[in-house]
Length: 194
Image (tube, rainbow, N blue to C red; front, side, top):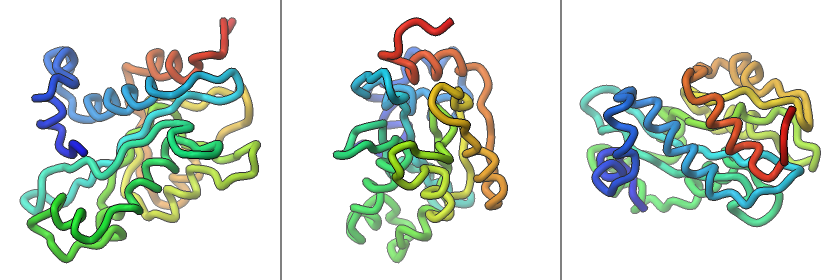
């Protein structure tokens, strides 16, 4: 699995975006949009993408992609953030030490405590399926910050995910400039919205 942004860039991902906007956060959000585009469209759910980036203090390790996820990627009615967290939880101690060679005794809990989440849509606070909301999963994982491309529209439920994250002490940053793109991919398969 490709983990560093530089490798993603050298492989051709992001190349058309790098010159247009050098902001690293926008580049990670564009990766999340790419994840969302992998979703099978459905009229009853959003297509969302998520990227987990571990960002330690300067000098310890460069920012590293821990996991990615998109809606319905894993079996069941799964959401992007929950899928990215589930994939991170499958990493072995050996895989973590390969990702972070300067911190060989790193645990997943340590990595998650230094993780920035990039998600195309506000993490859900309510699931009509009865499954645990993504906001709660992110809080339980003790993530550091959450960068959001667009608020969740009220198409299905009233979302308060960003507020729930803030109430738990997680920094929430709304990234400006890609809202329309995030919403367009989120509503893929929904038909015309007036």
